[in-house]
Image (cartoon, rainbow, N blue to C red; front, top):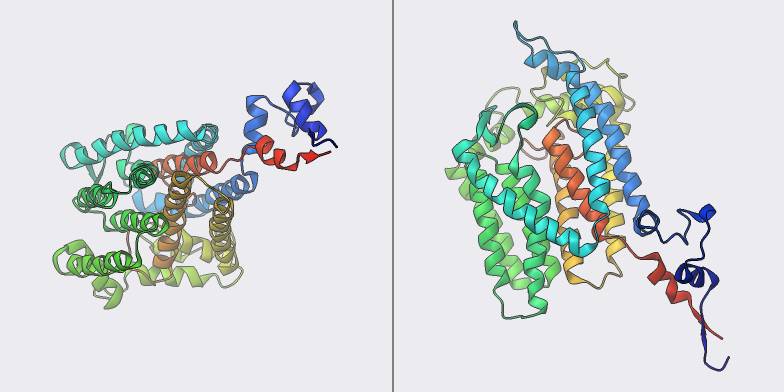
Length: 404
C-alpha cells in the first residue's frame, strides 16, 4: 500500500539483531559461523565428505598389499600402515578444507594467487633439489616434511589463470590467451622434466576448459584441439615415458601389463565383491593403494561400489554446474570451472586407466587414493570451490521482499 516496501519478518530480525540464542545457526543467525553455515553449499560438502569416508575404507582395503610390497627384511610395515597415515592426512585435510571454505571470495582469490606464486617456484626447484621416488623426481623434502609441489599447484593454478583470463572484462585488448598459454606451457615443461605426463595433460585440460568458458572463438578452440593432438603425437615419438606407456597399453609390450592386471583385479569380485580384506589379485598390483585403488575396490566391494563412486563424482560435477547457473561474476565462473574440471577430470582419468581405456599415468583417484600431499591439495581445491560458490542467504531472500 502507498508504494511502501515491506520486508518479511526474518529480514527485519536479521537487520535489527533481534535474534535469540535459541536461533543460533538458524537462518536468522548473523554470527560469522552462522552466515558461513547458511552460505555454504552443504549438499556439495556432504558429497565430498562421503568420498573422503569411502577413501578411508578403500585405503584400509589396499593397505595390506602396499605394505607387503614395500616391506623388507629390515623394515616390516604394519598391514594398515597406509590407512593410519591416510587417517592422519584426513584429520588435517578436512579442517583445512573447512577453513578455506570460510574465506570471502576476494580473500580466496588472493590466497590462491599467493599459493600459485609459492608453488610455481617450488615446482621450478624440483629438478634441482627434488628427490626421486619410483623413478620420478617429483618430491621436495622427505618423510612428513615431504611434499609434491605439482599437487598443490593445481588448485592455485586454476584460480590464478581464471583471474588472468577475467582481465578481458576490463580490457579486451589484453593478450590473456597468450599470457596464460605461456605460463601453462612452462608449467607443463617443468612437469615433463620430472617426468609426469599425466599431470601435464591435466593442466592442459584445465586450461582448455577455461578457454571454452571464457568465450574464445570456436576457430581458436579447434586450433587448441589440434595442438593437443600434435602434442600427444610428438610426446609419443620423442618422449620415452609416453612411448613406453602407450606401447604397453596398445601392444602389451611388457606381457601382462599393469593395465591388464588392474582390469583383472577390478572384475575379479563380480558385481558385489569378494568382501573386505578377501581380495587376492590386489597383491599383484604395483600401486594398489594409490593409482589402482579403484581396481581394489572392484575386487573387494564389487562393481556396484565402483558405480556408486563414479556417480558421486558425476553428482559433484552436476552440483557445481547448478551453483554456477545464476553466477554473474565471470572470475568465479572461470575459477570454479577450472577447479571442477581438475577434480572430476582427475577422477575420470584414474578410472579410465583402471578400466584399460587410457594408458597408465600415475594419477590418484581424488579423496580415495592414498597420499598425504594429494589429500591436502584436494582439500584446498574443494575448500576453494566451496568458498567461491557460497551464496548470501540474506541477499538471496531479500528477493522475497514484497510491496504492500
